[in-house]
Each structure stands twice: as structure tokens, then as C-alpha cells.
Length: 137
Image 1: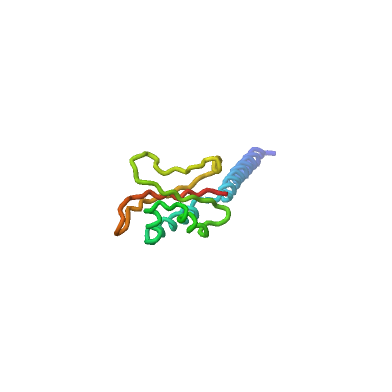
Image 2 (image 1 turned 135 degrees about the vertical axis):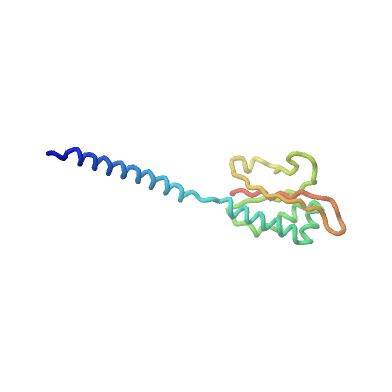
């Protein structure tokens, strides 16, 4: 056979293309299965913070440091698979003024945090820092 080398090169190219296509297929299929959970959580946090900013009753609760009522108000906003805590702190010069109290319940979990500053209303000026902590239950 005179053209043995040509067939061999065609087979090598076919195998190389098959291996390359297989690698691309595996990498692509793994990227599809990764789901970004942070986007809906961030949207929920932004909705809560904007409602606190716009609602005078909620602003008053924040300015009076009433974490219990604020946390109870937003209970129905969160699905069953998420836990949350809304923390109200005085605006200080500390590097991290608003932290969660109990870390044991969320030790190995991914925590999403959004915050805002509520400076006051027409009758009361005492700026507060509001953090919304969210994690998977």
C-alpha cells in the first residue's frame, strides 16, 4: 500500500478532534450545572432595604432600635430555605460596627449581607446602620 501514511494522519486528526470535542463538552456541561444563588438573595435584600428607606413606620422602628419588630415584619418575605437576621446598629467609626451575635448557627454557611444607613426622619435624627444578613437554612 502506497498511501498508508495519509490514512494514518487522517485517523490521528480524527482522534484529536474527538478528544478536543469531548473536553469541551465536559467543561460546558459542568458550567451549566452551576447555579448562582446570590442574585435572587441580593434582589430580596435590596427590596427589604428600600422598603425600610421608604416606609415611615419602618424607619421609626429602625430609629428606635426595635430589631424584634423589624425582623418579625419581614418574616413572610423569605422562603423556607433561607434564614435571615436584620441588625440595627448605631453609626460609629468602628471598622465593623454591625455583626451577627451568634455565629454557631451559621458557622459553615455562606452569608449574604447588604446594608444601608437610615439617618432619621423629620422629628428624630440619630443615624442608624441597617444590615440584612441572609443564609441558607
